[in-house]
Image (tube, rainbow, N blue to C red; front, side, top):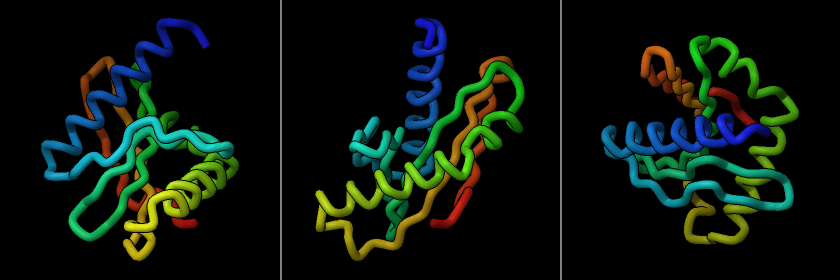
Amino acid sequence: MSTSKIISGQTGEEKAKNFLLNLGYQILKTNYHSAYGEIDIIAQDQEELVFVEVKTRAKDPETAFSSVSRSKQRKLVKTAANFLARNPQYQESFTRFDVIAVINKTSEIIHLKDAFTP
C-alpha cells in the first residue's frame, strides 16, 4: 500500500473517531489487532459495544460501503469475538457493526449503523 493511502486512511480514521466522540460515543480502542484482522475503532454507544470499520475514499461513498465484503465482515466478526474473549467486562454487552465512510473531496462523513449482522 502506498504511503499516501496509509496517510489518507489514518486521517480518515481520526476524522471518524472525532465524529463519534462528538456524538457522545466513548472510544475504547483504536486499531485493535488479532490473528484474524483489525478493527479500526471499538466504541461504546450507551449500552452498545460498537465495532467500526472506517473506509476513506476520494469521492465515492458507494465504493466505501461495497468494499466491506462478506469475507471482510467475517474477519471483523472473528476479531470482535477475540476482543470480547480478552475483555470479559464487555461480554454481556449488546454489539453492533458499523461502517463509516470518510469522503476526502467533500469532507463528508457517512455513518451506516448496523451495517451488517454476524
